[in-house]
Image 1: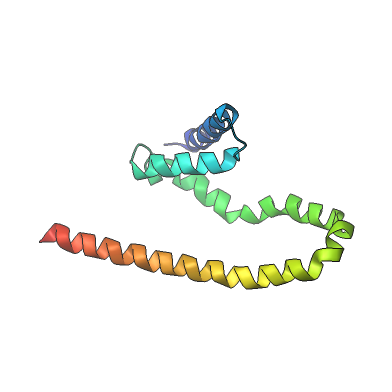
Image 2 (image 1 turned 90 degrees about the vertical axis):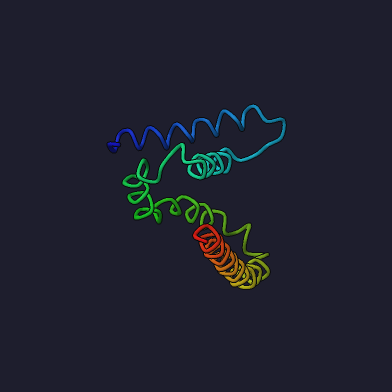
Length: 123
């Protein structure tokens, strides 16, 4: 699939996420819905990784740009954050390693399950 088609596919999934979020009776981020939708499409092999590979690689390579507006907003609202800065930093310092550990354990578990499934499939 060409780059324009890949971009159209990703934006189409994002648009579908926006539509689903608008239909839900509760507030839910459309971006999260779009990621879940894309994950489902990839897992069911409706969309193959090669269908979005080139555009995804470009997006990953430039992902730092997505954090510029958020960082600018934090700097702009620093006077509101200053009174709770120490608890905020403490929470960040404590939860970041926890997230890393849980992610690492999850990846190890999935790899172990996949290896076990592959061995059973060959027997």
